[in-house]
Length: 116
Image 1 (cartoon, rainbow, N blue to C red):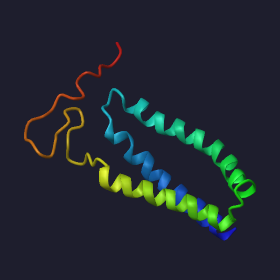
Image 2 (tube, rainbow, N blue to C red; image 1 turned 60 degrees about the vertical axis):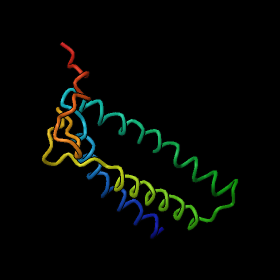
Image 3 (spheres, rainbow, N blue to C red; image 1 turned 45 degrees about the vertical axis):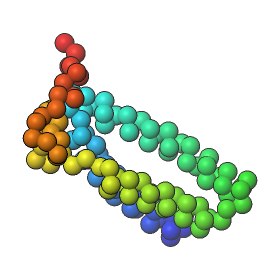
Image 4 (cartoon, helix red, strand yellow; image 1 turned 90 degrees about the vertical axis):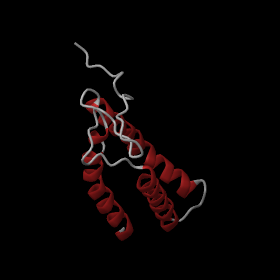
């Protein structure tokens, strides 16, 4: 019960960071859609997670502590991936993606147009 409460507390605390970090990685034209996709996939995880927990507990005979360790380890792996491959747009113009290695601005995102 205590470990579940701590897991819930820290996951909800990180959720605010996700909502702040995700939209700033997209152009203004696609920012809403870019933030909506992760939110939609989180809904899939929110209703499939309890089924996975029940399956791990009942069919695979994993203890409750083991289930918490599995999900905690998964969160740590994902955090490491974001730390290594995450994009920090602070001080950069997202509309004209600026690569850190060159001084030229890439027009990689210019193909996206806003609907009229």
